Image (cartoon, rainbow over all chains, first blue to last red; front, side, top):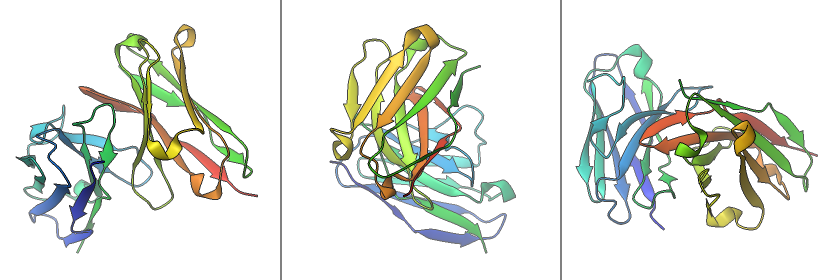
Length: 108
Length: 115
């Protein structure tokens, strides 16, 4: 079973700052990795699929990189609406998905 | 546009069963499979399983084997998730989702298990 870990658990930043979130897999997932954003009371929203492709309607300030076991989600300049929880998800064993535990980006 | 509309909140006693529905619209129902994901209060996302609407094939997470059943009803374009032998730690929001090239989620259904 592939296990995903995310770091840090919490990231405290100010609007305008750059956010760098990490996701690591216990074995290679190639580039079959997605990133989701979730705000309180809402369903998750897909940001990035296949490690580096932005989903429809996602602003260019969100970018993803990585392959194999190490992945990064970068938010180049935080907007007020970006403060949320971010989850990575592996899809190499589709339709079996697993999620990472999440990183909370909160306002410093 | 694709929409997944789920059934309302439920309160169940330990040992009971719950069946959550997910009404799909805005696309040809057998084009995509339906995944189910749950989220306990204050916790992360947990994938529960997937069903092919096309042929009914299912794939369940190991921890739910034996007490989880996913079905679909093409006449009403509705997917169902039934979880049996409920425990307090099954209290969660249950989401249906399409995660197959396109990505769409239902609004979630809160299931509370309490005596």
